[in-house]
Length: 142
Image (cartoon, rainbow, N blue to C red):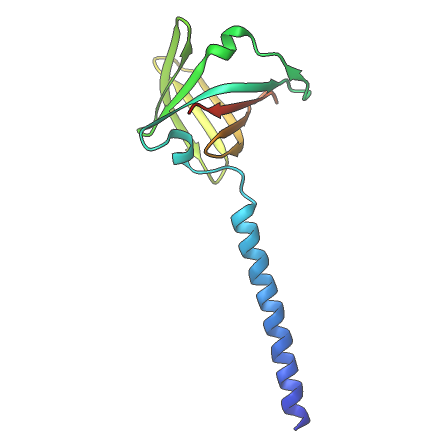
């Protein structure tokens, strides 16, 4: 009789440990990723983002100029983008690697691309870090 009780206690202890580990894995996989999906970036057909705030490489807040406040960045679901404001417009293609949390903008008719680390991507907010360490927080237009 004692061996059955011992086996039951060992089994219950194992099951509690396994359930705890499973719960931890689920919580980490669901809540730990701040970089969302491509559809959060572009919407179903397109989505427009405007600069909200900017910090330099040292983390100091930079004041957005009036021109920067008027600029917007529009991502299209087909992989194109348009960036501009006032009288300027630049176009090209974009690629988002969700696993690596990297966003690349390849400008049309130029051998220039911009690469960003995606620090946060939600339906309403996009936070990017440029190669020089500066960061830009953008919000989706409604």
